[in-house]
Image (cartoon, rainbow, N blue to C red; front, side, top):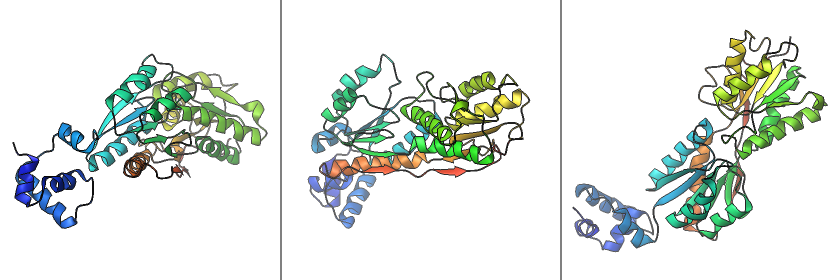
Length: 333
């Protein structure tokens, strides 16, 4: 098995230079880096993670925390983060920390501090004051995707604004009886879900429609959206003319429920979601687009910046979101 010394000898450089060239830590000229990489490839050399950790003081692993594993947004964000981390030679360690779960506190108290990760990405959760204190005690960069505090880097969309835009689109079409499906149901809900409910309520209040506010709890899945929509739409006399889904999975579940009940979309019911899920176009779903994979890339960039320059000012970026109009919304009959 080849060693770093073998690579250095073949490339005609010192072991320290070879290590910097292969780890990306410290300056090495492009020509020298190419020479070392060629030598490593010729010798089929692969750096041992323990040796790299001893040499650099880093584990080459980033911890990522999400509230749920089954939602499209988080799977896309994780895919983006993994792509960016692999490009930089880092591994990803994933933890799901659902609200109200027994496993949540041990992860913040024991697992994250003990594993010595080079940084933490917390996505879609609202760390309690105690939990955020635990993350900051690790003394490694922390990046939040979604809710954050001033002491960390963060990228987020304005969840309340996204839901308000979705609701205002329906109001502009002439709808007044608009219901919201999602939020406040089970461990699959996230902090952003609550912000979206608040955005819906604010838009309805601003339009003088507060008496028509209806929120049907659902977790962020198609089956949960389907079940909530069946209950909401089953009574012809109390059926709304439009529905805002907390996310596209819920909105698609509502579209399927409407079809099962014989309710035409959008002729008899308009449906709008949030996210622009990969299946949104298939269902001709009007939605608010966000780009979680790109947010994963950006979170990793922020994390690496924090590793290279611990004293750099914290960045707080609001990602763009836009209304995408398809064929699931129309003026009420």
